[in-house]
Length: 108
Image (cartoon, rainbow, N blue to C red; front, side, top):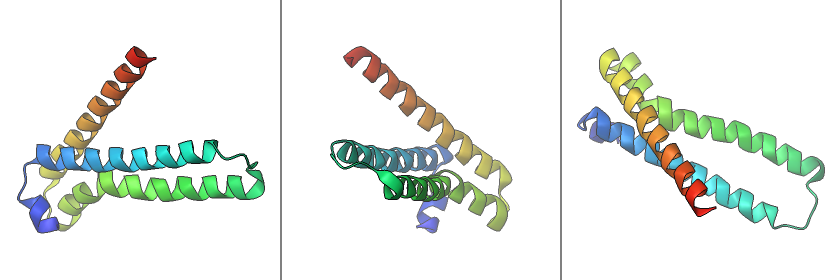
């Protein structure tokens, strides 16, 4: 997988990272939607689950956003390329956030 990513442009890798992050967030939103329809009160285990999900989500999204740039910077010593990938990832994520926000506003 790393060899495939190394051969791609920074913009392509950034777009893939942003899409992976958005996909994961969408799955978590589906989980929240499912849990909101549950009639059971969360109690201790509900709050425990939410904290565990927070830690797990931070690890997953941290890996999808920062994993490959850190690999480029630390292992391959390509700092400029790492910063480009990170910048494209954040840019594409911001664009997706704006598109979703506009969709929510216009469809509400």
